[in-house]
Structures are given as structure tokens and as C-alpha cells.
Image (cartoon, rainbow, N blue to C red):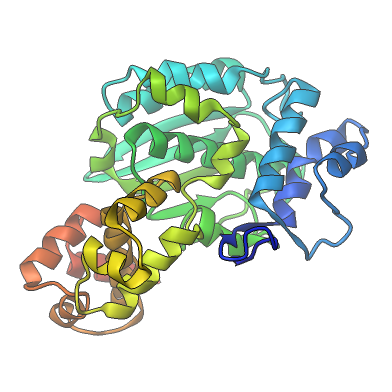
Length: 355
């Protein structure tokens, strides 16, 4: 959860990371018999209290320092090292792709070379798409091994963050099925991945597959970044990706909360600016710095509330549409199909059948 930052910036909030992500990141060191204490001390992290949380800035600093110390952007978790610079070349290989689908295809082919233990692919069918991350060999004997859990968390986060950056917009994941038991830090998954995060432990002796579902239309998004933007993006990367496209960023939170509180009345950017005593241009810039936009937040608020209402209540679809500020039900239908690839009634039926 967000909490107040240090006294030097009392008016800003600071996102934090559960310690489970830190212990997972360090698992490769432990497997090699290496002491993580110097790295933790250098980044100001005390791992003794497993219930504590650290700032995402310190987490990103540990991420990058560990990569450099090992010369391995895979944290020593895999059968071969993913040498420092791999992420940069992954980005460069995707930059000239015409669409997100092609960029992910190139990413898959590149990762096959530098990360053979995990196979990445994208499936597309009937308006739905799935990003698939599959073990090609068992990463650990136990499904709940911290290093194995972190490997899946890390690669999904890396590919999702890169996709959002390439398309210059947030890309909502509808659901993710993780191939391991629910970890102690699972509450953070709603901030990092999606509220619909599920856990299906891999059978003993088998390999696991992660499935991240989203609207197939997003694969057709054009790549909007160029070489000039890449230089800025790579400063502090790949650890910096941990600070982007989360759902607990300060300006995103403030805008989202105002939009939710005002429903069913719709608020425009000028209305938000008036309430925050800032200019629309400042809000636009701050949201862009946090990897978001006013339109994407407004869509996400309506989408999250719509999905919750349709799956947790028996409210009429017309009532849900009205409560979310849609002038007519047909506009809500169109928006819902764009979000999920299916009509609201169909989505509700599928959810009931699945339950």
C-alpha cells in the first residue's frame, strides 16, 4: 500500500514492495552459496523482518546492482546467465516492429536464445489473447520455491512493462494464472498484475505454464516509441520497470479516486485539474511520467467497477451502465466488448459457469 514518503518530500506518496519479491530476487545468490548481505547493505535494505516493505526505488536499485554484480539479468536463477545488456538488445529488437504483436514475437525469439529455460509465446483466438510463459525445464523441485516464483513474476513484469512502454499506454491484463501456490505476498499482485490473479500449482514432477489474458485488439496497437525515447527509457533499466505501470502511483491514485467518487457524474480533465488546483498540462505530464493517461485511467475505473458489478451482483446491465456514467446502454456495451472481447451478459454467464 502507498505510504507517506520521507520528510524531504512530505506531500508525495511512495509505493512500496513486499519483502517476498526481495527474497525471490535473492534466491539465485542463495542457491550459489553467495552472501546477499553486502548487496542489501549497499541498497539500505533490512531483510530480517519478512513483514516489512521497501520503497520501489530501493527495490529497483537492488535489482540493477544484483544484475551488475552477477553479470546476469536473470539473477542467477537459470541454467545460463542472461548477460548484462540483454534487456537493451531486447528493446532495440522490438523498437522497429510495426505492432505490439510483432514486437512480442521478436521478444519471444530473442528470449529463446538468452533464456532457454522459459518459452514465451502469444496465442490469439476469438477476440482474446494470452501471453504464455512456460517452463522448458523444471526451475526448482518445489512449486513454491521462491526463486521459481520470482522467475515467473519477473518475466511477466518485464514483458508487460516493455509492452506498455512500446505502445505508450497502459495495457490491462484481464487475468493471470500463475503455476504455483498463492505466495505470502500475493496481495501485491493486484497492484502489479491484475486483481484477477489466480494460482494453479504445478503437479509434482511437471513443468508449469503462466497464462496472462488480455483483449486481442491490443496486439494491433502500433509501436509508438523511437530511438530517442529509448535512451531515456534505458536510464535506470531494467530495474526501473518495477516503478512503471503500477496501480499505486500518486497522480494515478488521485485522479482515479476523484473519478470514482464522482460517478455516475463524468469528470473531464479540466474538472480534475480544478479539484487538484493544478493545470491540465501539469496533470497530463505527471500521468505520462507515471506511465498513464487520463483516458486510460477513466477507462480502467469503469472497467474494474463494471467487472466487479457483473460478477459479484445481480444488478441489471442497464443499471450498471447508468451508475458508471454512460448516457445509454449501447455505449456501455461497446466499451465492454472492447475491454473483454465479449458482451456483458456473455461475460456474466461465463463467470457464473466458471464459479
